[in-house]
Image (cartoon, rainbow, N blue to C red; front, side, top):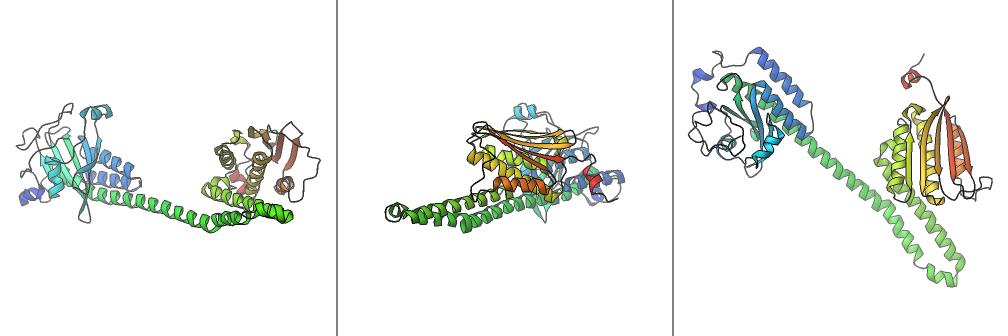
Length: 413
């Protein structure tokens, strides 16, 4: 789109005689054109992403009046074009043109006056300044401001009416009608983006408050409780040992709370409706810790299709198994697999760590294996631990695999 050096007084709608803008006489859009505007308006109103809205507006307005090229200029606070979205120009050709227009000349005229302009020939206009290198030739021009509550939010520029020497008054009316819908859509998309940014900021503040009020204060308390330990080790070793045990317990609780924050931000990791996605999310959390490599192989066909409560139990079981492997196994690799075998869904969490003897009773307070077994039994599954010193550990859960769809299961007879 060219910049033109001086404003024109030959094209704005308010300079046309009353007879030229009155209804009828071929100056107003016909019913099919109005239906096209309605369809285009519905399309842009259904999109909330600002970038998508802007591009869709340009694509739609170009088709409405059969223009070869179309553009939407978004004006910044300084009155210059800060964004320029185009349609009809090949991306490589657009790149070859170089810098985008900033809003001088004809483009700036619409920005300054807020009026529609139609020009039969850009090249013959007395104020034209020509085209930059590699710019495609353009002849006829139609420019329409996009307003919202009387405030400019952008401008539509169209060139080269296909099958005609210039754009008609009916074309201008059509674009002006569409521009009103475009203004609403742009403002709506901006509000949606602003609301999204506000929601992120509010969530960040909420997490910050929760961390400060809970976990950070807890860690501060742990630090205070340990300050006297070096002295107590000499004067009262028993009390020092108790302080350390209490600190370890507080740290474990803090780790649990932090994990809850993480899983709260990853709803699929606790959503019993999404068992396969939840398994993948849990494995990803361990992998991101950077201490152990996690290989994942999940067959969607093996989804046991549990109800939400049972699905949550299974995910908690897997979380416990992964946590045990990270904390106790000294493994370099964990493999998480879900496979369909005969009439069961088999879930395996295997590590290559130091292993242990499952026959040895766990110390008091260490109920992880018992908890995992209880969870598996509660959801109708079979639980098994295979391990030996130096041979790693395999946690195996087998669940009956339904043959129907979830919809079949949820639908009462």
